[in-house]
Length: 270
Ligand SMILES: Cc1ncc(COP(=O)(O)O)c(C=O)c1O
Image 1 (cartoon, rainbow, N blue to C red):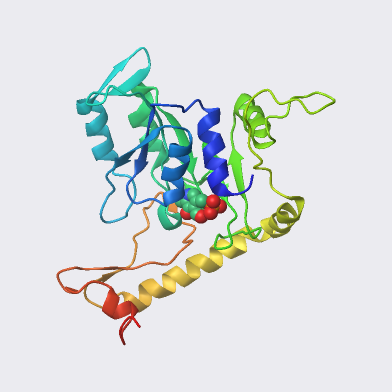
Image 2: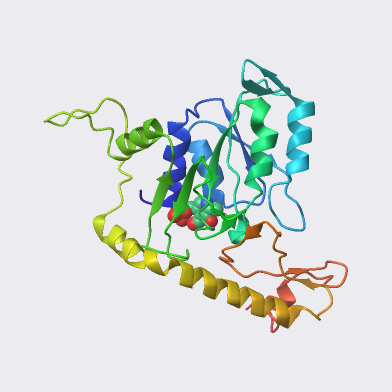
């Protein structure tokens, strides 16, 4: 697929997201996630995140589903709009996995399909199982800034052969299996060029090394900032192994009252 945004778009179409549906997405996400929901004619339903981790607030989600939605015949609707909540796109911010096991438990009664956005988390693990391989349809990005890159690129991962078939079909201009050019519906030219794919495949057996190096860098930052008041590096849950795709730190607003800018641009912004 070319790129991760296209992978998300097709994954959502293939699980049946369409006009007037709602798709839950954590509010701290990358805009591609929200855009791909909108491409399907659906609307994003922004969910709170845990301020400490930036990951989907699972208690908040459970409260919302219990108290502000109605479920009948395996379909959940948001009470205030009457719209169907078709899917949720959990997102592993900066490479730290969401607790997908807890999410699955919460979602069980609601008939909401998961599309896991693992764009930033290739190589991360959730209870020793790799993200993207947790039993849901998932997507990866091979954008230039990702752990493995093809310059650009994306991938849909799915255990469901029907979804795989539908994604391949839509990505190839919805070209029917016929001798001549016959197209059964409006498709997309989302196929990944072979050149990009070759770059990606050539890096795959180095994934563990890349992730291990990322984790070393994040650990080094954590050590260096450990004694600086008000500077917090992201915690790692005991059940998780983050890909540490991007090393970040957060600042206590009570200490850093003028925000992050003076630190990022100590001499001014020009
Ligand atoms: C969480 C997330 N989802 C989706 C994307 C989109 O991937 P792409 O840039 O390959 O379209 C990105 C980033 O690039 C991302 O970080």
